[in-house]
Amino acid sequence: MSRIDGNSISNLMMESLRPDIERMKPSIAVLYAGEDPSALSYIKSKVKKGDKFGIKINLVNMKSDVSEKDFLFKLDSLSKDPSIDGIIVEKPLPLQIDIKRVSERINPAKDIDCMNSQNNGRLITDDFIIAPSTAMAVINILKFSSIKYEGSRVAILGRSEIVGKPLSMLFLSKQCGNATVTVLHSKSHNIEEETKRADIIVAALGKPNFIKKEYIGGNSPVLVDVGINYFNGALTGDIDKECYELASAYTPVPGGVGPVTAATLFENLIKLKKHYA
Image 1 (cartoon, rainbow, N blue to C red):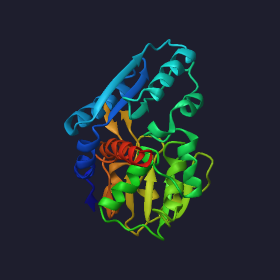
Image 2: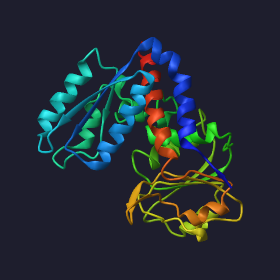
Image 3: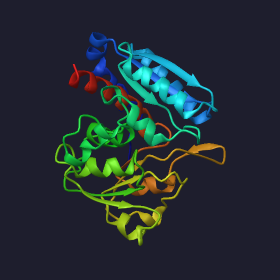
Image 4: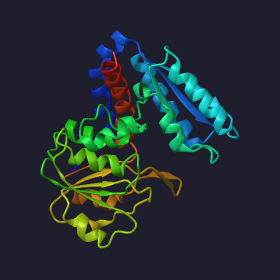
């Protein structure tokens, strides 16, 4: 089994982006509401990496009881601000704010997490510029690890709009996929049988240690763990660590998909700036 180091991949990606970053000197606005601990943790990690590589990150914090109208007004002003090149809306948002309305109000040219339907809808037609950062991070991990997946059987556990659904489109796409994909979810039957046949298993359920040894076939699959859960006082993925010995390669939690997701956000920033230049 081989442990995939997400931090090393993230650093390689950022170094490859450095010339464009130094030339463009881009800036990002992170808009969020309230003080959710997990959101603040993500924000701090982005700021740290952005500072290291010369990307200016502006934090725009609104109160947790902010009205949807005021939140959208602030988002509109950021979308129109010529000094802002990319916008991240950090989740979770307060219940009074509709995430779909928010997504559609982000300027597509600044939508670096691919929330707007003008961007993520292009995944279906296979002419996408960018993809949601966590989904694309999975693809980047496989590419940087020289893991071939064209024609492979891929099992994705989870069908969220930020990971499962877009990742299935990426794996199916001619642009960067050509895999055979099965998406599994809470209503799926015989999940174990499906995962045992897979060459690559991607877990994005948000259920700590959901994948056990009995889900793994004898073909030494690649295990990619997107899950981030706080369980028994520790950060835990969706894949039980006992599965690692049955895998040809695996991503740990923490230190796997997370760091690559941050680098992929900055990669999306550069791609959009080039596309809309």
